[in-house]
Amino acid sequence: MTELQILFTGLLVLLLAATMIAHVLDEVRASPSVDNLIARINAWWIMIIAMAIAFALGRTAIVLLFAFASFNAMREFVTIAATRREDHLAVAAAFFIILPLQYYMIWMDWYGMFSIFIPVYAFLLMPIVAVLKGETENFLVRIASVQWALMIAVYCVSYVPVFLSLDIPGFEGKNLLLIAFLILIVQLSDVLQYVWGKAIGRHKIAPRLSPSKTIEGFVGGVVSSTLIGAAMFWITPFTIWQAGLMALGISVMGFLGGLVMSAIKRDRGVKDWGDSIAGHGGFLDRLDSLVFAAPLFFHLTRFFWMTNL
Amino acid sequence: MITALKRLAAHIVAGAIVIFARALTAVRGVWKGVAPAPTRRVYFANHTSNADFILLWAAIPPQYRRHTRPVAAADYWLKNKFRSFIGRDVVRGVLIDRDPATRSKDPVTQMAEATDEGASLIIFPEGQRNMTGEDLLPFKTGLFHLATARPKLELVPVWIENLNRVMPKGEIIPVPFLCTVTFGAPLAYHADKAPFLQAAYDAVLALKPDTGEG
Image 1 (cartoon, rainbow over the protein chains, first blue to last red):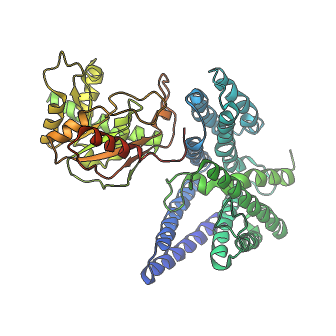
Image 2: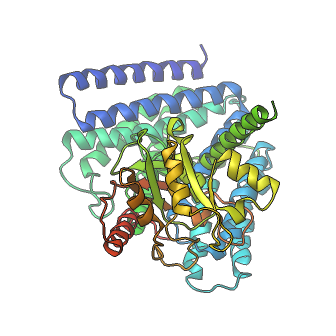
Image 3: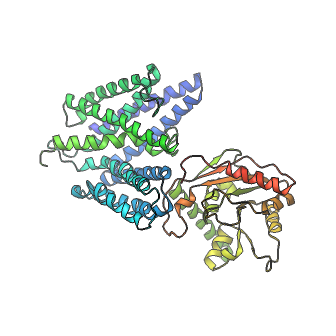
């Protein structure tokens, strides 16, 4: 079996076990939180099956899958953003020009362009398009919201398929494993922080931002996902220590990303980004950690492991 | 034969419109005070966009959607062949003449007769699209007269959120925003016009989500 097949088989076993435990819990003592657990696990089935199909189909499917995720994430972001009708054209350009172009350039592997396209060109284009309407009220807040929507929901999310463009000596043809490692660690870290927090969490870590997050949950989650990351070194180009350090960086960035995104939610007075993923909330509720972890993990890997920069 | 083909085409176009609305807005019905049911109802909602009834329509489960007809202005929907195909055949609108001088039938009678045939109705009691930036304009009296004529109808208040951001007036490209359609508890009938209309107005406004202001 290839590493990927082993990985997905492992996930399958894990999900089957989780599904069985959740249904036993439901029999023993049904409660709204068990219902939520079952909804979450069902959503995990769908997400993992979607990932498995995209992995099996290859590059184009993966680019399309994350373009789809970006579309949904950006829609959630602009929905709670403070835009006005004068920003309509800027928002339309973000959805129908910038987003497709970004993913098209990733698909065609044009690193020099897709790595700066949104931070440079889209960043400058958005306020230009909006300013032509002449509406000055809240201009900075409005346009910054659109720029943030693009940076978070498109630029940062698009780092996931970008791993396919890496060229690491001795690791040719295996870049999918880096995507799998990243997503596995980010999501495990989220789940483990939640589980540790539920089990032994006492002291709130950021009561104003995220009342359910605890110090115990953070430490337990980060330590255990770091250990798992180290143990998964065999699917990466890293040594066991390097893999552990990468997993540590991914977990901490994921945690901080979760805090930033929940500060935005609180500022705008919403609990979840949406409700398209039953039990989880919106796409951004599932992607918030990934959005912050992916660019860092990508650039660390590129900087240290790609020899022919 | 022609009518059968036309009906099939109308069916397909209706499906396509709903799919398009879903893809763009991920529209979701929030059944807060009432559940979807085959009961004959009058859904009365806020009105900010020409596509309001499409969104409300898409939020109703398909088995009840077919019997739910929007009440709309005949002068708009009969203007040309395309509009009349959409207005009359696809959404099966109850088309009323807004001009008292030319009309042959009283709009309230028209609506009441449509419900007698088994339809539920979608109406916008503000009487026009709200372009003012206010949440809700004062209601016209049609809802009261309809409720008086057919007291057994269930009067369901509805709030449509965000659709005005998808395509503001004067724009031609629709932009994706998440939209919700919230259905409230049925309104009790009141024999006095003013308190009834005030209660109806308050019931719609109470469904407006208090977050994510535009």
